[in-house]
Length: 412
Image (cartoon, rainbow, N blue to C red; front, side, top):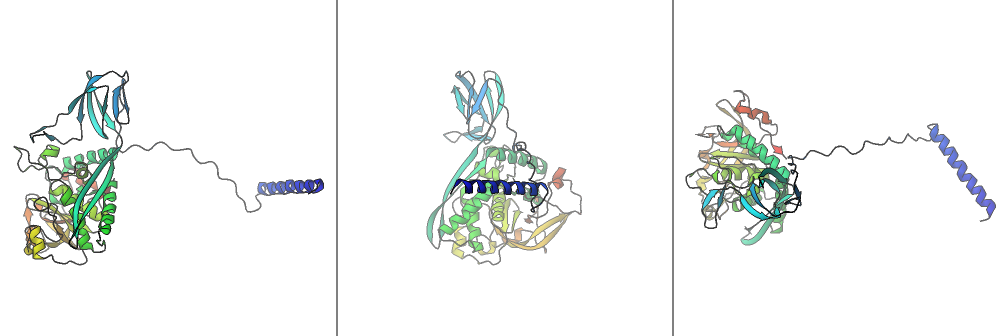
């Protein structure tokens, strides 16, 4: 291309650019003003649980606490999330009081601690993920398979839920009436992760998640076979929450049960309900004299054989199916249309899972529209997890007579 052509092309380009600029300035060409610059990054979101500032003279990095001068010293560490009791190598139980450690640094897992050093005492919150892994055996069509689940809990989210749970127990602790059991069913990232893995593992070993009864057995089996029952503390027989919580009764949220991997019947029932809900089942949490369990709605039900029930410690007359209690209005129970099959929250003899549809005592141990079964925890029966809920009704157990108990299913 010769120089004259280059000059002509250059002039044309400049002219086109000038015309386009004039058109934009006059609002022509269908264009619009460029968007004004957006706001800058907003403030950092508040953490779910406040992180304690480390006092002057100390440094915390990657879970390692030390003095800024690097001096070796004596530390006393009290883990605020430790069980109330602790067991020695020889099985002797005592109240947990923390531990001592000498050195320049102490390593702390994610959680919250009270630290004493050199006459100073201060709280330490360690951020990070709390890891859990469980493995168990499950049989499909007579073949035994190894299955496993791994999950994480954010330490700050756990501390926030633990604080909320203690407040709920402070409120309901004056009665522990069965009608307040639904407040314990709190969903979380951990229950969501476990539910997803349970579906994947069940399909991997040849099960079908569309067989809602068999899959419901598998879900309950995860809890029955992997959550340890609390050890009995001498002098506190029957107080099954004393080992973990130091109290006669405490209704855990699923996240708390998963943290300790320890739970009694009401704790396990809430966890089973949470997993059912994560996996699309209609579910209820239930109570009868001396026991809490779960309920699940199924489109169809196949009775288990006498042999299967014998292995699980049941008989055919332990079959239990009843409509759920939607509201409590004074002394009256209001039932819904959904029918629930009983799901025991505990294994048989610690090693055998228990199938959906059965509970010791059968349907006679729960309230139905035809009869009310009373216990010292209030009416026995299946308490539905309603869609419209409000924790405000819990305040001082002060809901007016004649108004329904309305509870909120929480997700943290």
